[in-house]
Length: 190
Image (tube, rainbow, N blue to C red; front, side, top):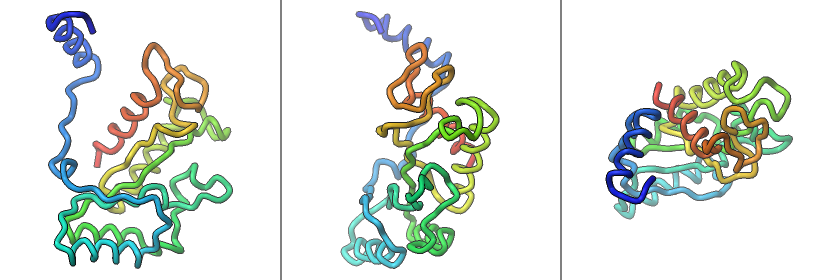
């Protein structure tokens, strides 16, 4: 970035010309978040929300983490295997949260389609369609946002990197920056 304030301003200007303006966080993001890596049932989740309400504790975001989908037989690599036994109707659950002015998110450890032999690399039509339909479908049902978890042993690699392992980079662009771009781009349409 340089050694002077002027160098920093030039670097920031160059970054903004490439990446565009940085979006501001919505007000709710500065509030109280609750998330717990726990195999919730819908009844237990609603009971937890009621507990916050009964104690008059402020809460803005209630996250289900990774426990929204099935994990057996690698079903957690897809978006269409929700845990319907624990949450029979996610749309109704999202409405329950929205009625209480709560936002909610799912945590996602994205598995690339190329790694399971289902299509091309990062910018292929198969990968783009898979992310668009998977992420977007849940947002249409009422999910507020996605938590892109790059801290996993696989992730969406940046363009021109033919591996799904985290930590690989292309010209300084790593899976954290590329994955954040993909998730931001998809979710900004909703």
